[in-house]
Length: 151
Image (tube, rainbow, N blue to C red; front, side, top):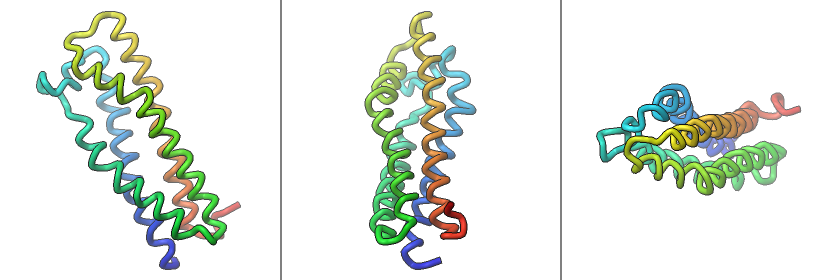
């Protein structure tokens, strides 16, 4: 592995942490909170999900951008660009839809039947964010594995 690939390796590790957090939420937290909103309402003793994301996302994003810089003159650049598109596509979607709705759910108190429907839709759609992160991680893995792994 070349020195230029150490930065994508760091991005792969940090991205795996982000993906793990997303899978934790999707597989454990999201299964319960639409019908038990107290689980995600910090003012009622619930999880403060934003704390993890505020800490985990920036280092990954910095490493991902630095990865593009590190391998820009190599064919691996295309895989890093694909990782960037997948990750930042999910981030834009999160900023536009998921985060505003999550904040409303976190402060809503007990949910009305309509809010439960909206929460369940939020959960269904949120699974695609984990899929986008998995795509970004897979692309970074190709960079790390080298030319033998590229098509």
